[in-house]
Structure formats: structure tokens, C-alpha cells
Length: 524
Image 1 (cartoon, rainbow, N blue to C red):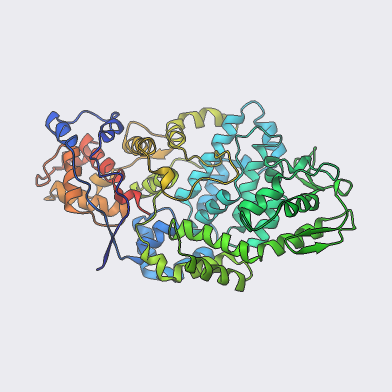
Image 2 (cartoon, rainbow, N blue to C red):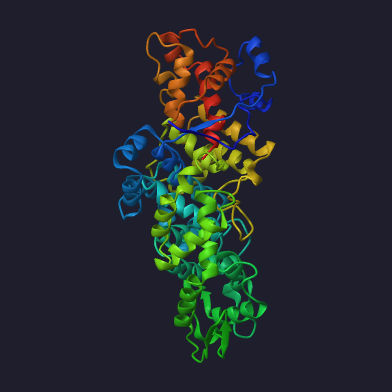
């Protein structure tokens, strides 16, 4: 079977001293093994198998589980993708709703309930987002939602009126329901969402003093892109958007005709007399016009290709996808299907880098950890969330927590910003925390994969190979297996007994850390 080498040379599989730091929470290993762990090693290239199911689960979702791999291999990638894009129920969504019921309530209600604990509310939202990535049965829609939350970024931490309270409903009621629909409808919903109106100060705009923030960012980041509009376009677009504001009582979107600028406007060739004080219909028409612009098509195509195929997609591929997007009337699901059908999609396996949040989700899924959720946290949210804080703190140190990117451009989707020693170290610490059986909530840590795969007569090398297959969905090279055995302080050819399996030993936790910190987990 054909193999492809991943383009991930930075981690060098446990050869760096940082690995020792990340394992600080674990019991000490034998001195000889510790010394061996710090000997310089030449990085060993990772090979990525030509397995369509594995690639689809890594790239379109948040990583494989044994059950998911079996499902996709049986159905085929195309059928599985179609079922993922179709409307369906998700049992875990009910679990999240039961645990965080305030997420689906009105912004005003949430603000009232958590008026004295804003940080707890934000952290609860962040955990709900992470749980969706990890446990959602609709993995493709969960990842598409992340793509658009980055594309139409709204930071929950900026000090703006109505934020972060409107940020929760922005996710659940605006972006998620439209993530696989048409870009035109998504754009229309985003433009008038209270979260975006607050984040970019549109709610303060009026016919006398039009605020240009939303108009500018919508043209530069969300649609046609830099260089494809003029200052005149920005100014007239800002005038068109006047009237869109937030109701002071309900904190929901409201259109106020008395705030709307009237008079002739021309934006990117869209001409209107704009005589009526009620400009809502015109705003919707222009958003539809904007979504169908060739420059917007290329921008959206590039956004999807950078996330799903390559940090630097070829101009030819971008044009191909853009044409398909326009032919299918901005249909996001149809565009994603088209991308998956292109040879570049399968040919890019192993060439994308997981961001810290992606690594966290993939690790929890690979370890098979269940979530101890489902109970209404109610007013105890602050206490409960605080007990989960070590995970969130490490993700924050790694620079990747849901909704905490301050700038309108969203978290970087390319590898370069994440290829630094601090991010790597924090991710390693996160992986060490995950395998630490002394750290519990919010996950139920049952029998470790490295212990669970053990059968009488197996060598440590065979156990490591089986655990790696279960966690990553693929086999790993013997050089990597031996490096992991070295880290765990065991002889690859020795045979662990049943006591090792049931003892919660540092060795099989070190084996799992070695797998999670390896390039096999970092590639996407």
C-alpha cells in the first residue's frame, strides 16, 4: 500500500528535552531510561498510509476512533460524507444542552444568570465547544462550524457592550445551523447577528455617523478580499448597513428605520437609489450579490482549501473550486464534496498540522475517554468549571481556546504560527495531563489503551504497536516504537504481565504520552 511522508519535522519524536518537562507529573522512570531519553536523535520521518477512511476522519473531522474507522471503511468516504452533511440528530448535543442549558437561552437571560461570573460563563461556552468537537456524531459539521467561526470571528473577551452574552447564541443559532448550507444565507445571518453587530460596533452606527468597521471587515476578510474593493465601496456599504442595531431591552437584533441612511449608493457595481428608510431588503439583496462575486468565490474556496487541503493551495485548484461554488449557488456542502473528490485532497494526507485544540480533541477521541457530563450545572458552573481548568489553561498557553482570538481575522489555519517551542511544549503538557490517571474531571478515564490492548504473551513492542493503531488509526515505525519504549523505561522485547496491565503503571501512561506527543498525532 502506498505511503506518504508527513511534513512535520519539528517534533522529532521525543528527542527534545521538552518531553521530560511534559512528563513531570508522572512518577520518575529509571535513571538509565531518563538519560537515554535525552540523547539527541535524528528525526524519523512519519509515513501516512493511503487509507481514505483515515484521511477523511483526520481532515474532515477531529480524528479517528476505531468505531468511526469501521463505519467509514464500510460505507465509503463519499457515502459517509453525504450522511454527515445531511440533517440528522446527535445524541451528544442533547448531553451538552443538558449540561449547559443556558447556552440555548437568550443573551439577556444568560447575562442575568451570570452577571457576577462572566468568566465562568465564557469558560462554560468554551468547554461546550470543545465537547462538540470531541464527541459530536456529526464530525463534518462540527469542523465546518469551526471553519466559519474562524472566518467570521467574534472574540468573546473584548470589552464591548452585549459581549460575551451574544457570543453564545452566535455560535448555536447563527453559524452552526448554516455551516453546511449556502454561504449567501450564512453571510446574511452573520451580518445582522447581535454578536457581530457588537464586536464591530455596528450597533452604534447611524445615518449621520456611519461606522465603517463591519463594512470594511466584511469586504476584506469575509467576502471579496483585500485589493478587490475601494474606500468608496466601504463608505457606501457602511451607509447601507445603518439601521441594523441591537434592541436595548432584549439584546436581540433590531432594525430601526430612523437610523438608516437614504440616498443613492454604489458598492462593487451594485447600484441602488436607496430611497426607503427600511433598508433591510436591500441589505439582504446586497449580501446575496456579494456572496456570488467571483472574488468572494475565490476567497471562500481558498479558505476551505487551506483548512482541508493545503496551506498553499494552487491557483488552479482555487479557481476550480470557486467555479464549482458559483455553479452551485454558494452551496458549502456541495463545495466541500467537490473538494473531497479532487485528487489534491487525498494527495495531501499528512501535510496539514493540527492546531492545539484539534490535537486535544483527537487525543481524547483516540484515548476513548468518555465524558462525565449530562447534569445541569446550574449555578454551580463556576465551581465545576474551575475543577476542569488545567486543560483549558494549557490550551490557552498554547494559544488556541475557542472564541479567544482578539482580531477579526480568526485563528491562523496554516502551520507556521503553531510551529514554535512554546506551543509544542504546552501541547505535550496537555497530553501528559490527559494520560495522568490522578487527574479526573471532566473525563472518565477507564482502562488505558496501552493496557487494554494487552494479551498474554505480547511484547512491549507489540503492545505499543497495538496501542498506537488504536489511538492514531495507523501503524507506526519500529524506530518510533522503540523510542516510546525507551521513554517508558521498558525493553521492547520484554513481555509485560497481567499485573502491569491492571496496575495503572507509569510505563503504560508513558507509552500513551509518547504516542500522543508524536508526529502521528500532530499530522492531519
